[in-house]
Image (cartoon, rainbow, N blue to C red; front, side, top):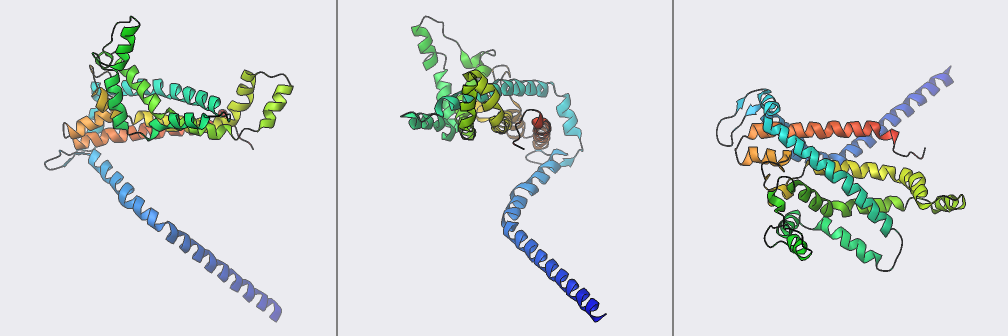
Length: 310
């Protein structure tokens, strides 16, 4: 009988010690992440909450804020300019993302082999990524200038009429897309280079023995294995495309005829030109919900085309 009592006491004591260690580990973990959590709370969560409250008010830059509920969201949905802005944003994203991914993957396939001087070329391709976005946009704005731009000068040499690239509603958006692709293609190229290094060479050797050509090797071996990298690069590129602002601000100011006015420029215009802070905050949250929903859809569909080693 006494042995049973001692066993129960020892078991209870061991359980208490285990709970104590778990509590100590939990406390230590919270202490380690507390600086980052405090920073996120002060500089992210609180401002986001305040911005959401602002979106529910009529908040002029100077003056008293008035709570209006969802009136700002209703006004945005009914605003015909917002429809044009969203259309421009979708057109820009649809033009940039496939071109960026295709060009980055092509460059990565060309640069993955250790050829002399290839490191320098990789560096050259990555330099635009670390170049100031404003400086990049200014340079390309002058290159596409109507009278003395580099592009029109080259066209004149081969007998092609000069174009008003940034003042033509049909040409302005393609110009912005091209300059944006060249600016950020190096980042995805590096991601694809890292993904290609994970492809085992013995798979290519086995495929060559079976008579598979380069295209079949790429389609059946390379693409499936680097599909997680493609998925990551696609999400990053889409989010970046929907947040474009600097190129539009520097090169076109949303023109001509609002043909390049995207949603972030629309938000900036409402907040810092018209001083409709509550309206702009509501537009910003609409953008957030769109990106969040699109990311969730992509994440839910990833299993259909993203390769899983398991």
